[in-house]
Image 1 (cartoon, one colour):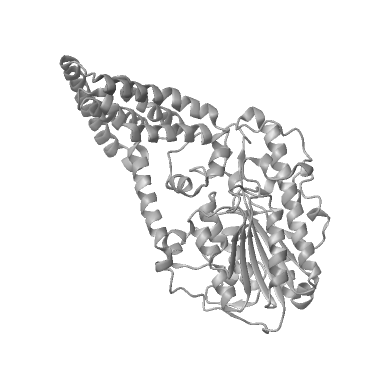
Image 2 (tube, one colour):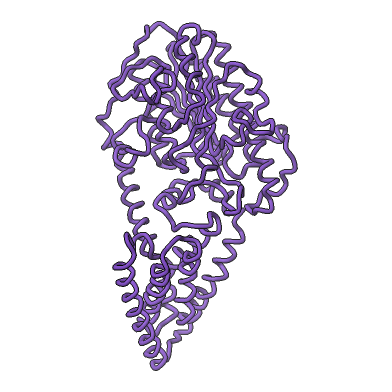
Length: 513
């Protein structure tokens, strides 16, 4: 009865050290929730049953502790709940296998009261009446102090909001928002049904064109040789003289379920939340212009906008659905070759969604692609950073092979062609004293947002549209939002006219800002 409220307050105490709350807010964040938990525990003399009913609160607390262990700060954000809903089993298994310390901590904290609660229910044990009366008086006194602190904090701390700084109220608020967004996502097909880019091509229908957009996964620019990294992670692309690299590109989201739809649509972070439910992807524009369109993904269906957008292509293929496990990304190139060989139209547009450098890095490439060693210890610990970095850099080298293979394939077609590559977001790999790891943290870092962006155009394309190539080269030293630019750059490269095209966001139109 006394221990459960204290155990549930552990995340509150931890947040007092990780968050920049005022002193009054920190005191409120401990006293008021502890009183709330205590009042619940004192509702019934059947304490075993009461503790079992508090399982949802223990899940919140456990989730928060794991999050703090992983990211070092912040409450469970809306995106974290959506990530849980859209992450497949294989992804979750790989991650949880590397968080054994955090999982052990929450098990030590919350399994004993649950087990004890079950035993007490079985024994039909109850708290003595005198003991529970004393406990209730203490709980009410604590609640009165907590409410007084809440009022004091609200009056004295500018901008204080319980829905932001009071755990678990803030997490419950975020969960409610996530449920609302998930419900809106479920109705996407209805809300977007009438959307049209009103697109048309400005080029002859008889003119062959092949364009490919490659969306990377968890690849950060600072580990790309093309972007100035000291290791040879791009041995193939760095030898080419027809690659335009943009070393100052940032993603507008550190989460896949937001960043990929932005890359595939005219939306960016300023209008994503309001407009995503009413928008269709870049495929709708290319379909209207008579292209053979294809979406080939090395990730599984997760009922997100990525799925919805991909399914708007005339051919949609999730190559991992049949196996249940991610394949190496060269499988997407094999699918691409098959699609091009059987495509009757002369105009082709494809999006390849890769698995890139997603953790566990060592699983993202075949054994014969091991270059940096050792990679034998990939548990999520700062002490393992050298091995983690070796495995991560090997995955970048494998991406280098894949992109070079795509370019060679497009070159062999001898038609105007282009390929643009951008990663959805980057990754933290215990880079500094904060000890951050992975991505999708409630507060982003430069490592998570600095992404590689490269553009390739075939000799035939550069000959036919030299101004496009000149423009792409002219802006390669500029600051770029990949989220805001990729759609418009791809549309401009293909010579498609649409009211949704922003010339100031296209890197190839000569009007980039």
